[in-house]
Image (cartoon, rainbow, N blue to C red; front, side, top):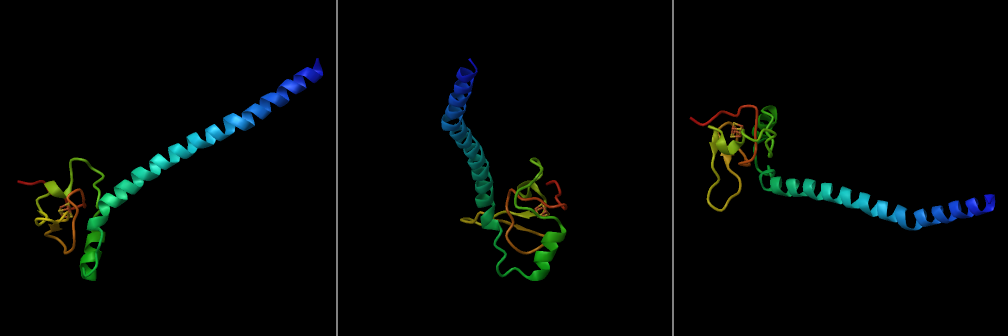
Length: 117
Ligand code: SF4
């Protein structure tokens, strides 16, 4: 009887190692890759307005000091509906801001956000 139980336990462990463990690994890998692709999508979406090439250092510092970010953390407060936003020119994804030079994402935000009047 004891030998039979040991044999069953051995076979159960073999089955688990053969089928359950790899499937669990695939499931976990799938979860991780979907999170990664969402993050990558956000990063790609935000990239066009992140190029600060040629922007004066003083404006880069001002943008940082105002807490500018390319993706607003507050859904109702984005650069596109800010009084200080300069809309993108035709063919461009990025606009500007009256407070500093450089590209500004319509989905961006900073602590100086002001409602349009
Ligand atoms: S003040 Fe801030 S929120 Fe308003 S357009 Fe400029 S960067 Fe965007």
